[in-house]
Image (cartoon, rainbow, N blue to C red; front, side, top):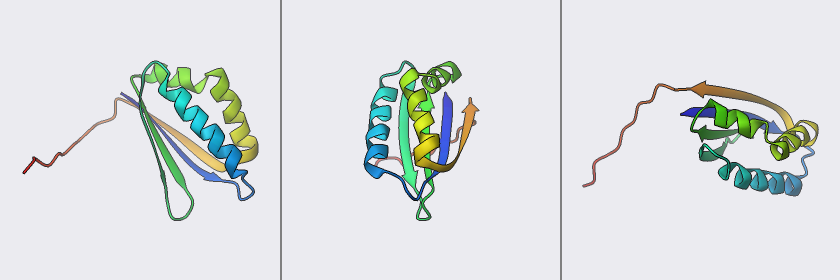
Length: 103
């Protein structure tokens, strides 16, 4: 398992419709990539967004990161969508889980 965590804040002058269209297109494209496992995105009350994607391995995540369509939208993100962002990656994270038994 390989995790990618993308923390970001959008620009105040964001073109919301353009951003949403690109985000939906990129999520659909990511889901079709070899090694894709899951994607979730969460927004905090203060406007920060955390997006978490899970990949089979680092090679699959890197391939997605360099996909030509994704690379073009990443550039658009830096020029038009994001005020700031930080990308974290984690290979083979230590995992703990809990599941309540069915009653």
